Length: 317
Image (cartoon, rainbow, N blue to C red):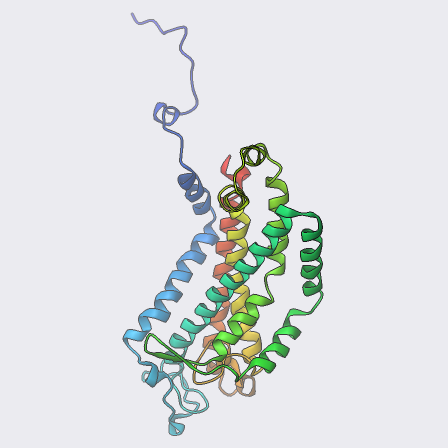
């Protein structure tokens, strides 16, 4: 005859889960991120797009992508040209491969410019406050009041053609690439600066920051080693979405003929002039347009997943 232990307490979880060690922050982050199905879809799509842009160079050379043959102009998709040809006979498939590299490069580098300016302005305004905060925030608000697209068009028109072509890693880039990167980065940092300022205003009043000040810790160390790491979550999310914003803005101004100039291809400048062939040659806009839409949607999905995964309240659940 067996007797049950009267002191035993029934638990609703298996014993191995009760005794499981606590998860690290990285494990908590990944657990929360993978629950966001659209974020996983976006991450997988981004990986495929990057592989498409990089791996395609193994099959097509840049000279082939820029080769013109007017006898083959406006050819519909076929076995020889799966995406068809453009108005001067260039292969659209090859141009989307090399154009994707430039579009993604512009998105990443413009985002870096945006993050550097936005974090610097927001950190200085939030940490020092008083007159420093007033001056920097009034300047930020003044920049916000100027329509970004208008400012982009004016600056692209003014600086366009003044930077010589660049040769890097054996490839020739139009000097307009540098101009567009700097213009987009210099006109997109304002919202990030306000986010960083709000984070710094909140974090600098916490006990561990006050203790660091009391012990004579240098200001730079407090900003970069104590406050900034605790404000990294919204910065990462804003930076991710900044890549999508930069790619979209580049497409806008390239569509209007003021973006990246030939011979360098981007998904945006491939759409220039395609509106004249919307019905007669839809492949001119369908393929680069689809790639832009997929890239921007995927980055936005990943940004949503990062926002949920980096939220401390989400990680606690």
